[in-house]
Amino acid sequence: YVYLGQGSVAGNDFKIFDVSNPLRPMEVSGVDLTNTSNPVVVSGRYAYVGVNNIAGDEFRVFDITGLETTSAIVHSLEA
Image (cartoon, rainbow, N blue to C red; front, side):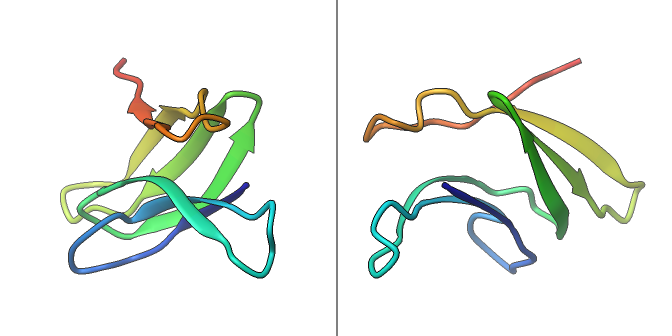
Protein backbone atom coordinates (compact mmCIF):
# COMPACT_ATOMS: atom_id res chain seq x y z
CA TYR A 1 0.00 0.00 0.00
CA VAL A 2 0.96 3.63 -0.50
CA TYR A 3 -0.16 6.21 2.06
CA LEU A 4 -0.41 9.73 0.68
CA GLY A 5 -0.98 13.01 2.49
CA GLN A 6 -1.82 15.96 0.28
CA GLY A 7 -3.45 19.36 0.28
CA SER A 8 -6.70 19.72 -1.63
CA VAL A 9 -9.62 22.10 -1.79
CA ALA A 10 -12.17 19.31 -1.54
CA GLY A 11 -11.99 15.57 -1.16
CA ASN A 12 -9.69 13.20 0.58
CA ASP A 13 -6.45 14.71 1.91
CA PHE A 14 -5.17 11.38 3.26
CA LYS A 15 -5.40 8.61 0.67
CA ILE A 16 -4.48 4.95 0.66
CA PHE A 17 -3.68 3.17 -2.59
CA ASP A 18 -3.32 -0.54 -3.30
CA VAL A 19 -0.23 -0.85 -5.51
CA SER A 20 -0.14 -4.63 -5.78
CA ASN A 21 -0.37 -3.96 -9.54
CA PRO A 22 1.99 -1.00 -10.06
CA LEU A 23 0.53 -0.33 -13.50
CA ARG A 24 -2.94 0.18 -12.04
CA PRO A 25 -2.84 1.63 -8.52
CA MET A 26 -6.28 1.73 -6.93
CA GLU A 27 -7.46 4.09 -4.21
CA VAL A 28 -8.93 1.90 -1.47
CA SER A 29 -9.65 4.45 1.23
CA GLY A 30 -9.23 8.03 2.29
CA VAL A 31 -10.18 10.75 4.73
CA ASP A 32 -10.97 14.42 4.23
CA LEU A 33 -8.77 16.25 6.74
CA THR A 34 -10.09 19.72 5.72
CA ASN A 35 -6.50 21.00 5.73
CA THR A 36 -3.09 20.21 4.30
CA SER A 37 -1.43 17.14 5.76
CA ASN A 38 2.25 16.60 6.43
CA PRO A 39 3.99 13.35 5.48
CA VAL A 40 2.25 10.21 6.67
CA VAL A 41 4.08 7.72 8.90
CA VAL A 42 2.77 4.16 9.19
CA SER A 43 3.64 1.73 11.95
CA GLY A 44 1.75 -1.52 12.31
CA ARG A 45 -1.96 -0.91 12.06
CA TYR A 46 -1.75 2.86 12.60
CA ALA A 47 -1.07 5.81 10.31
CA TYR A 48 0.15 9.02 11.93
CA VAL A 49 -0.63 12.30 10.17
CA GLY A 50 0.28 15.86 11.09
CA VAL A 51 -2.27 18.40 9.87
CA ASN A 52 -1.61 22.09 9.26
CA ASN A 53 -4.53 24.09 10.66
CA ILE A 54 -5.03 27.85 10.97
CA ALA A 55 -6.22 27.42 14.57
CA GLY A 56 -3.15 25.30 15.40
CA ASP A 57 -1.43 22.22 14.08
CA GLU A 58 -3.01 18.85 14.79
CA PHE A 59 -1.72 15.31 15.10
CA ARG A 60 -4.09 12.54 14.07
CA VAL A 61 -3.83 8.77 14.38
CA PHE A 62 -5.80 6.48 12.08
CA ASP A 63 -6.55 2.79 12.50
CA ILE A 64 -5.89 1.32 9.06
CA THR A 65 -6.76 -2.33 9.73
CA GLY A 66 -8.88 -4.09 7.15
CA LEU A 67 -7.09 -2.73 4.09
CA GLU A 68 -6.88 -6.22 2.65
CA THR A 69 -10.66 -6.18 2.15
CA THR A 70 -12.49 -4.25 -0.54
CA SER A 71 -14.46 -2.30 2.06
CA ALA A 72 -11.56 -0.66 3.89
CA ILE A 73 -12.53 2.11 6.27
CA VAL A 74 -10.05 4.41 7.95
CA HIS A 75 -11.00 5.33 11.51
CA SER A 76 -9.69 8.30 13.42
CA LEU A 77 -8.79 7.58 17.01
CA GLU A 78 -10.12 10.10 19.52
CA ALA A 79 -8.14 10.96 22.64
